[in-house]
Length: 114
Length: 110
Image (cartoon, rainbow over all chains, first blue to last red; front, top):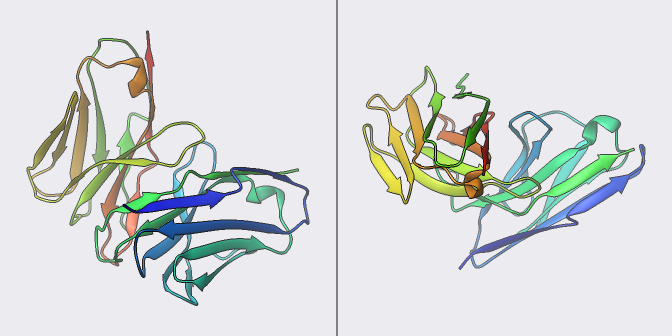
């Protein structure tokens, strides 16, 4: 069966510090991978998606970036965090990016920028 | 732009009561998914509906996809405290993406 893990689960970082959140998927090949952010009281905002190694699409311009160095690894990074980067970050995967395809989420990572 | 509106935003009920939450759009979706999310965790898929008019049951939960595939509802019978959580609907967008509603936050008090 397929599993998805992301870490760290909780992170408190000062403004201006770097960020690295990591996500791995097991049990499937060539998944589509996603990073979402969920701010308090708001819906899920798609940040990045990837259909293959080295292929990253950004949905929202910001000071975050994503990389996919391996087929089942997706990394969310920032060189300098802002207060507004605080939120709950979710990694997710799907079999393909066809219309309506179901996606499956990781456990989430709480980021607090202070 | 395809949007999904969920209502109500918040719902607080007593154990044993029934409830319905709604997911509406002016756009047609090829499919629609419902997720439940507990605080501090990722959303967990409950069901996917793909056919207009389709009804799916998952124990005390009944999901319906509208005939025109523009809306969906989730009905919970005899709610329990374990049903507490954020219920999210998500529809398959025209560009191959998944569009999420903002969710209904349900609290079931014992």
